[in-house]
Amino acid sequence: AQTVTQSQPEMSVQEAETVTLSCTYDTSENNYYLFWYKQPPSRQMILVIRQEAYKQQNATENRFSVNFQKAAKSFSLKISDSQLGDTAMYFCAFMKWGLAGANSKLTFGKGITLSVRP
Amino acid sequence: DGGITQSPKYLFRKEGQNVTLSCEQNLNHDAMYWYRQDPGQGLRLIYYSQIVNDFQKGDIAEGYSVSREKKESFPLTVTSAQKNPTAFYLCASSIDRGSGETQYFGPGTRLLVL
Image (cartoon, rainbow over all chains, first blue to last red):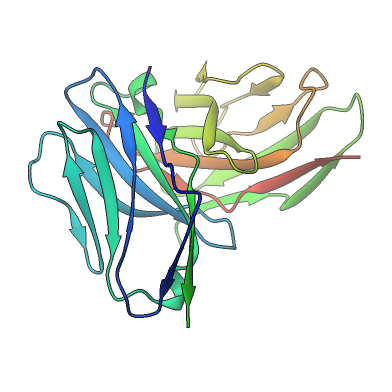
C-alpha cells in the first residue's frame, strides 16, 4: 500500500517571497503519478501541478514548481512570489500507474496549511 | 460552463436516517469518485465508478452506498450503518483513459449529525 506523508502541519510566508512545502511518499511501484492540490477556504479542491514519475524533468506551472527526487521518494512544491490568494491547505497525492479503475485512486497526505502574510 | 455540482452544500442527518448527497457533472467524464475528508486528514476514497451501472468500493465503503444510472450522476447515500458520518464529502470526476488522469472536484457537501 502507498502512503503519503506531509510532516509540516502549518507554514507561513511573507507576500512576494518563496516557500517550499514538503512531501514524502512510500511505494514499491516504479511508475506512478504525483499531484499537488490546493484547498482554499472555499474548500474547493484545485489541481496545482502534476508529475509523472517516469519523467526526470520537474513539472512547472507558472509560479509553482516541484522538486521531484524519485530515489528519495520526495516531492516538494515551491511557490514563488507568494500571493495572498495562495493562502490555502495544500495536499500532496499519489496515484498508481496502469489501467484505470483501482489504479486511479488518489492517496492523499494530511495536508499543510499555508498562510501568506501581507 | 462545464463542471461538477454537489448538493446540498450543508446536510443534517438525524440518528437512524439515511441521507443522499447529489453529484452531477457535465464534463462528459466516464469516471466518478466519492471522497471523505475529516479535520486534519487527507481525503479518503469511499466509492468509485468507471462506467454507468458499475461501481467499486474504495477504502472506507462501509455504511455508504452509491448508484450510477446515468453518466452525469453519481449519488452517495450515507446509511444509518455509518456510525460517524460527520465529515466533508467531495465528489470528483475524470476521463477514464488510464490512470494518471487529473481528477476534478466539486465544491463539496458538509454533513452534520443532529
